[in-house]
Image 1 (cartoon, rainbow, N blue to C red):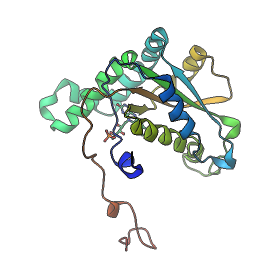
Image 2 (image 1 turned 90 degrees about the vertical axis):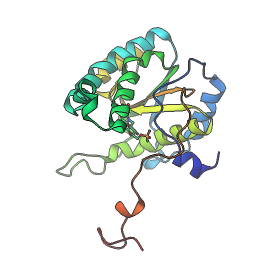
Image 3 (image 1 turned 45 degrees about the vertical axis):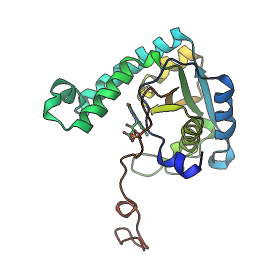
Image 4 (image 1 turned 135 degrees about the vertical axis):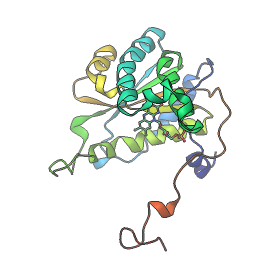
Length: 217
Ligand SMILES: Cc1cc2nc3c(=O)[nH]c(=O)nc-3n(C[C@H](O)[C@H](O)[C@H](O)COP(=O)(O)O)c2cc1C
């Protein structure tokens, strides 16, 4: 698949067929994703590929409390309770995400992505604001996985709601102390047709020339 096409049409997939995902395909995805950049080329990423049905149920049980708390805090619970009061796209998104959470154990493959904390150079750690730089050495790798999965014709959903349950997830999967959880990626063959166009803002809304706010030349 052409790279730009993959970038433009890799949506979040929340409904999957039960078809198994070949191990060779997953290996190819990881084989190519590993060329992602990372600070100092330390490549601190670690991935646990989970297919075991009992482990998938356990992961769902750890995911659901975070999802339900997020639903409440972000207003999604109100959308589910009174869908008529909201626009169709919002209702579809919230219902889709809710169904994904409730049926997480049915997703054929779960990629639990972590990063070794000693491998992170967090250059904004001393700033008086929330740090974001640590993520810069793991999320390019995650995005490579998402694009590679798309190129292989596989659907994927990247989420972070398992991260608050990190201690339990690490115990469940035997992940060592120095590895922090970064993302969960549900993987499988997409049950619905691929969308032809994703809803994204135009370049003019986020890119500027020379000074912030000045229109892009
Ligand atoms: C950091 C991050 C966290 C996300 N968390 C969730 C989540 O908890 N549940 C979910 O269903 N989708 C989650 N998503 C997927 C987003 O909802 C999705 O990327 C966005 O709505 C755009 O959808 P589209 O790619 O299908 O157009 C997350 C995506 C990112 C990058």
